[in-house]
Image (cartoon, rainbow, N blue to C red; front, side, top):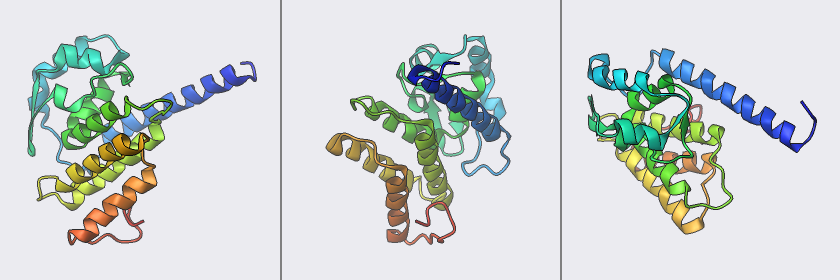
Amino acid sequence: MADNKGGRDKQARDAERRQQERDVATELERGDEKEPPVEAAELGDFETELEAMNFPTTGTEIVATLGDHTIESVKGSYTVEDIVPETDEETFDSPAAVRVQVQRPTVAAAMKRIVESSETLRNSEFSWTQRKAYEMTFQELAAIDADDDDEGITAISDWVVDQIREKETLPASRAVRRQAAKFCRTNGYQVRVDEWLGI
């Protein structure tokens, strides 16, 4: 491959894609779910139609095909449209990538809001590493306030969307973690320094 900007960009995209694939595989194998997983029995028809789709595919195509499917979780009912960003910028390489979204509907719904809001930004890329950091923050909030209707996830996703609208930029992942830690401490949740939110 030529050592020019195009070649380096392709190498970076390939490395990011490989990391995405590893992350998806890890997510599916994890046994220590912070958000209770959706029961496999709930995914029957959804799984069948998902497997019939051609991949890679966009969030827009998934919502158009499967958007009205309802997923029941211990936290409530969600449609696929509630948890998959309806955008052509969001690409899913395999059914497994979509399953990761469905397995954590609370976090996925928050990320959907942020991804769709970030589309209004010019010259701003929502990188895979930044996205994973946001997701980890939401997963930690889900674990901390498991009994509180995900108030923390709602508060922080609202804050991120407000930052996008007001400052016309995606807040740094460190700023999101800091805001999440502030929320936790303000609401009486202990955050240790050695934890993800202990910033």
